[in-house]
Image (cartoon, rainbow, N blue to C red; front, side):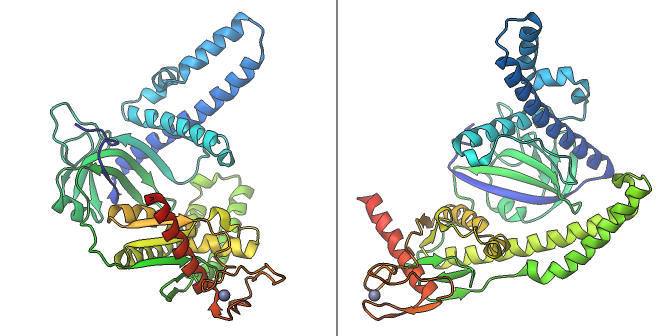
Length: 420
Ligand SMILES: [Zn+2]
């Protein structure tokens, strides 16, 4: 059977699960152990780093180094911390925690700003990963691995057993059989909902490719609007966070009051019923904003994918807008980065082309004659200048619309170079 990486098409499927209290306890246990493994590995590497600085060949130091090196293997780690060998602990959860730790290091080596791996704090969210394992004779489908669908309403997961599910998996299950399940993430959100996310792969597409539209578009992401397209339409900024801010602040004040009271009475927060109730109220408000943002970004991205064969946007790296605090807030509010990720994922899924270009001068250049503002004694346009006249060819421009046309032109140029 082909490995996940050998298969061409990939798809992420997230379904809600409804575990029993017993299953909830097992999820928590695995999540705790996965976090512990991750944190132990950080601690081991920190100690090794210190020990190796001591260049003296002292036996105790050498033995300790040997012992720690050995313990970096999840199996050895579990042998040392025996509770990790509990029958309800999924050994693949340990292996995945180690893998995630290695990935965090790789990330750090690639982009230093990512930082070295940090200790994972114990929070109210839970998460661990396992893998769907196929036997030698198994068929590559959703019903034959260690993680499998039992029917359209149930899934089976090692250590947890049978779980009731809901979600959009029917669309996939009904239309396609040649699917391999890869990494499986079991999680609990801070507002106490449980999910299973499955990485799927196949040699045939998960969705039908979209019909050709012969339309190309450049999009400018800006703070006045969420998006301005080169074809002229605009999508306004959603402001969920702003509309909910007052309510959130109020509930958060109540939460801190309950926290103070519990502290004064020397009760732990985890066992304080009033505090936990209020914590859920706040978590649910946050979750609501997250869900609304997610829906909005899904709608915008799929509309672009539906209507255009080629979509070009700016990369955010050069955009350099986070210097300004107010802007930074609206950026986190609208979620441009998530939007670009969605565009990348969906364009691949539906057989469209999506690319990003360097935003340098896309705002300052006149699309009609190529004049760049700031040159020949002219002033650069500022964020306040929503409309302007080109001093060279006198064309009247709407700033973001002009920018989106430049973005499209830059993208087409880049594509032509790639083909040449
Ligand atoms: Zn001009």
